[in-house]
Length: 331
Image (cartoon, rainbow, N blue to C red; front, side):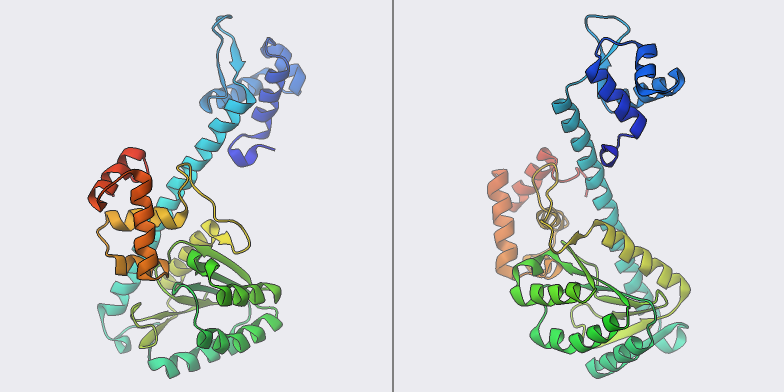
């Protein structure tokens, strides 16, 4: 039952037995859980590493279990720390992948690059997307990083999405957390879910992207103007990297119907992202774009964080965030 908190089945059984029989020895505990003594000693090592048992002050050489209240707090704090570390690794992977995409796209003209097709203008993009939609046979994976979607975009995409879902195509879409407060976008996402699609959200995304059948990816040439042009990538190496980026992002994203989780400091992913972006020197305009929110909302989030940290300036906010453990000492 506690495997999700990092405790294997044997160690959990031993911990429960120790709570029931706090003065039992190794042999008695082994008999109680039906395991060999060597296995039981390995479980005790695991419990010791997790700080769920500690040396007895009254009985030298004997281990005693910590109370379940303290034990569960220890396990949950440990898991939250691991999740925070994983989120940092995912963010680093996103940044590296976005940089790789940008460098690869700008490296040389599209005509000289195998596996790259250049699209110019919104009409060419929509025509190519319609072709990809007709040809897809298995799945579609998409990043939608622009925050609340426009009515025109949702109206244009619905017939294509309905056609795909009607054919049994697996569709997974990652939106920004900011869409949760936009009723039309939420209704559109719920429509996708009701028709068999899957929707999750994250605080920020590196770029707009559509991948079909893990063999073709369509990404914009410029994140500032996604309608200006795009590239269609079919190279195996690039597709492997983009699919890996999608899967790592999907694994940490939250289903639209779930509440946004907070970390051990009580920060949402959106708030943690603002702290990181401020520490990296980004402007309110850039932060707003990355989160898919208005400039006013980006400033409000920063102001709320300053008030919470007791900081009178953004410089002081950075220092307070490091002191509070909200931000690594080196970003």
